[in-house]
Length: 228
Image (tube, rainbow, N blue to C red; front, side):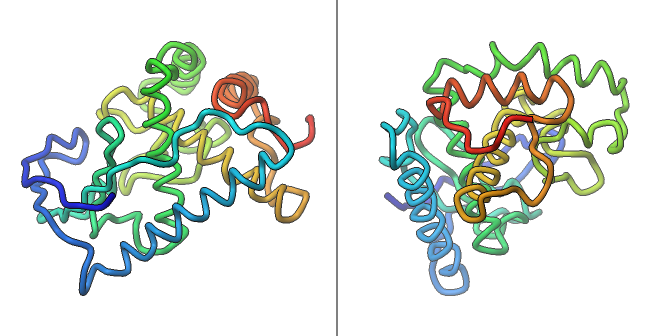
């Protein structure tokens, strides 16, 4: 179901204060609605193909509300979740292509499911996540974090989104980026039978531990990527 969000002054953490106003995805912004529809259909097809031979997991991708807004003073956040409602910024910096919208929605849908699983990521991924930050130091470099980053999304002037501080409980973002990596890798395996880059789980030990935990909890253990 699509509607609009409320006008608000949002505390955006590292982004600063953001002024959001309601904005229907019409006229100049209609392409955003088209991309949302395409992305949600693509996600449906992904689950149908991946779990064609076994029961799909209880992973929520339907019965959602989209609340469209526009930020006045900057192009972020692109989207955020409140319960089963996704607030979507029609001028979000990540939402400039169909693939960008799809990736963002995969990220946000994980937050919906993480919350439904009792804030799972906070209790199950935190130790490994904090070990990564300790390993890379108080001001971690991009080079140090790169082997541990599940996805390539980076904050302009900052670091990988999975490790950007002053962004709520950042282990949630690490987990959601890990779900995006799962979507990407399984999609490549379905389409081509191989990956375009080394498997995330075949990197440092923390990667394998986080990957196995997430795949087991949310995706019924389904992993088409061969063992390392």
